[in-house]
Length: 312
Image (cartoon, rainbow, N blue to C red; front, side):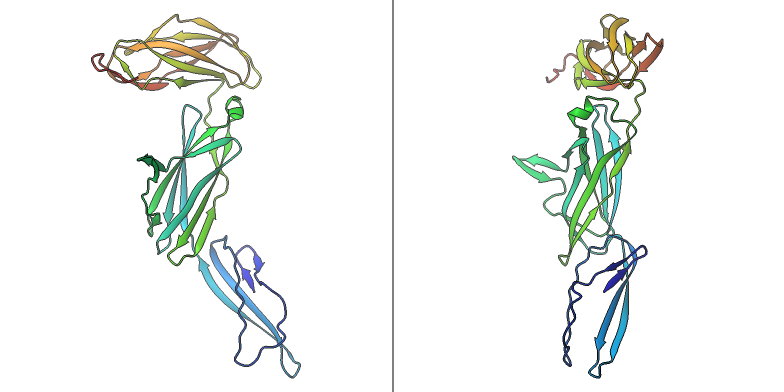
């Protein structure tokens, strides 16, 4: 038996051994297992060769045509966090006419990342799926799976490595139909375009969620030289906004920053306006090229009245 698809012809015969004799009203059964990996029209070609009692050699073929439809529709979205983390949202839709039991949906990360699944919560000390105890996916229903990928230490420390198109990993999905038939879908390597940070990147390593009005609070910034060959001599300027006021000396020298290296910087500021305030007003100047890099809307912080106690 052969299987003919639009792109290839596969031999499916489990055994090519000849049968010595086939008695009247008897039959031969041959169970063939094959993992279908293509959608579209498939043709099963069954060929039989035999010899009659008179010694005449005979041959015939039968063709069985069937359609292979897409069982699942998988869509992915990427969200880039300021902390180098990447969030992957996978939307999986059941395209069949019967329910599916989702046995496994996992993300196999590339060598650059570690992955954390965000599809469960802890209740009473037990890990419970966000989809409940029933893992069934009804026809045309969609589920959204979320994963957090964090660069491994050896890659995160080298700012110039994670640039351009990077391989994230691949999804491995295993399910069963209502008759117990098992199906598996493994996507190709998922890729994303890493955000461009230019020559100098400024990111936040630590910032409080909530602060008191007109009381100083501290943040920690990380400044990275994204260039692969140019050393920078940086000067930091802090410009006040209508709501954010920086504490400290503006225009201070940060010194030389070598290619693909970074430094951490602790800064102090306060807010004069309540509500959700955006932290802006940082300026970095490279004295070698006389080029200034502006950083606004770095992060947001909730400012409350000092009469409200902020939980530490």
